[in-house]
Image (cartoon, rainbow, N blue to C red):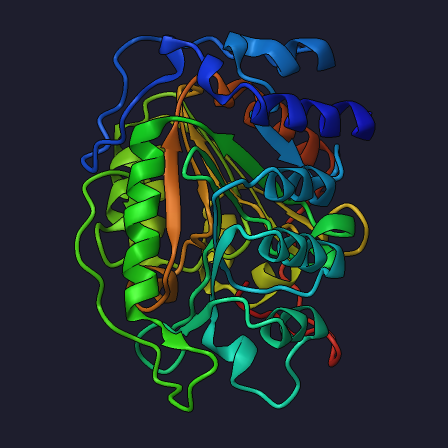
Length: 377
């Protein structure tokens, strides 16, 4: 199955101009919910999901496919530019692919979290890029704990890849993760502008300065931290939901989102939540939701890792995915992104949610052991 999906990524990259007009949609920062009803088909076959609406391999899930192979194929397809904003990079195969592209003359730029390069123990995968002098800047968020938490790859400014997936081995082999492939020009342009903002705000890793933070300018489309309120748009999606909300989010601790979910449940919205086991063990918000009777399940990923997704589906018609955890830090201090998507992505994420939900265990309050310490990822 993995070989099939890898080949389909290559097919996507060779036919980016062939996507259907039905697939083109812009992102309004006010996040208006579509008025038309949408029936989710959760029984899409492997063949169907490779050809839906003329766009191949719209998304990859770590428990179904080898995400790193698909991502590497996309990276290696770059002919002119490769722009990456990544929180964590420790997968040597991905680092090698970036190096290969750089060595054959493609313009490569990497933005990485400040904490990954402000230590004497820089990961060898990052160090290899630095040794080759790949253009790289570090960036940190605001306050004491803000981070550059994005996971964005832009290939030739014609293919956007984002989701929850860090460039790590654990993300590929242990965690529940996802990435989406997007060819919509409006969204790509928004992310290109956002990348330029980060690049301007970042600090050259080859310089002695390590400050790395500046408030970027505004971007009109997509949900991009410090440009528009990601939490505010999620609240609008929650408040507009009338039937169902399915949530697969690694960390949930935001009080405003808690209040919105509580209000939605009171008006009859069916809400299901899957979150990470370790994170949930120290989240008073998750405990309060459970005490209020919410349907909450917890997961360690599919191979003793993490439930690291950050997506939610609203009324089976609209969804968000990206790097954004539902926390105050993510909203106010980190560099984050979410993207609002509709059909045809919904059916894939619906099926993935059902898989994760059915494999997860009911939430019970517990404390982590001494060697288990939840962190923001």
